[in-house]
Every structure is written in structure tokens, then in C-alpha cells.
Image (cartoon, rainbow, N blue to C red; front, side, top):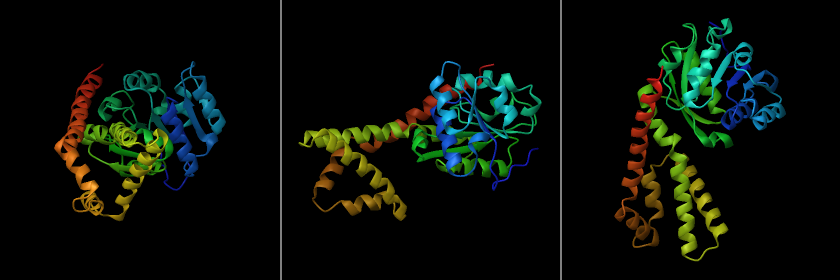
Length: 282
């Protein structure tokens, strides 16, 4: 087994060099976890923009998955879910694919499905990041495969903390993670858009309403760092018979909480269906 140190820069490869892979690479470099010239990413030959982005970063962009595995100590699989198995089949017979850590950020593909393709010595960790990783405010969760070690989990956590937060969960909770933090940004964007629409309805200019809505959402999330429960923070804003009390009453009357809870539950149910389809594919 290749011993990876948490205190040393790593040779990191990306099978799939899209926007998320670029954001991760940029975060790793900024955190001092990797040097640009020790990062390798494979991109589709038609994806010239991604290849150029990695080159401008100082990394190596290739059009074949094999050099990624050969040049790297940690391999991050960041292709679309239905491409994970075919991509790994291209590199499974390489001697360099043994004794390495493979981190998959593909939604829905189980660690077992990945382990079944790779050599028996390879270790696998599955990570569910989200799009705010693009601006280093991501929320990720990881699950270990059967051969991954505690050190592998620590290293993966350190990598993803470079672009946000990262928590370890048992793999059966990954559907819930995907439904909450993976899909959650979409729900928040809908909230921000709705807040802005409300401001416009009450007479605010569109650009001001959107700016206020976005900053209010950002500030409200930051207030959780005080350690207070969201309910307590809500109560601190809500004066007796005030405007906030009237607004929250309207939300409750129209099932706001139930709608959000239902959205997460519905997304989790959909994840289960998609996961079943992906992991039963030969």
C-alpha cells in the first residue's frame, strides 16, 4: 500500500476534468495540498475549454485516462455516473492502479460497484460534494469502501475541506446527503429568487431586491456560527405582532416547512431509484 502523508503535497489525478474537477484542483493548490505540475486531468478531446483551464492552472491535461492513474497517488473519479464503470475498466489492468486511493464524486455509484471493477488492492472512497465547492463553500460527505483505511478517510476529508466542509457518514445515508446538500442549493436558489420576487412585488427594483435577498440568505447562514439553534435565531427576529410574525404565519399556513421537508424526501426517493439503476448495470 502506498503510504500517503497528510502533511505532504500529493500527486493528484482527475478522471474527468470538468468544472467540479477544476474547482477541486484549484482548492487543493490554494491549500498547499498539491502542486500544479503534479496534477493531471483527463478531458474529452472535444472539451478544449477544460483542457485549457487546467493548463493555465499549471496542471497537465490529457485525453486518455491511463496517464492519470500512472502519474497520480490519489485518483479522483469525476465523470458522469453512467461513465464511471466504463472509465475505470480502461485503467483496471494497469499495474499502477493497484495500491492507490480512488475517490469517486459521481452521484449514486456505490463503493462496491467501483471496487468490483478495480484491482483488489485499490481502495475506494465515495464523496458527495455540491456545486458551492466551485466558490470554496461546498458541503461534502464521504463514505469509505470496504478496503479504505482511517488514514484514507482523513486524507479525503482534508482534501475536501479545502473547498468547504466534509463529514464522514455510513454509505446508506448517502441518498439523504445527496437530497439535502447535493440538491439543496437548488432549493436555496428558489428561496432567494422568491424573496427577491416578493421585494419586487412590494416596490423594490429587481437588482436591489436580488442583492438584498442573496446577502440576507448568506448572513442568516453565517449566524448559525453563533451556536444558536435556527429556531432561537428565528425567535430573535420575531417581535410580538410584528411584520416577521405575520410573514412566518403566512409561511406556516401555506405549508412552507412541509414543502421543504417533502422536497428532500422526494429527492432521496429519486436517488434510490437512480442508484438502483446505476449499480445494477453490468
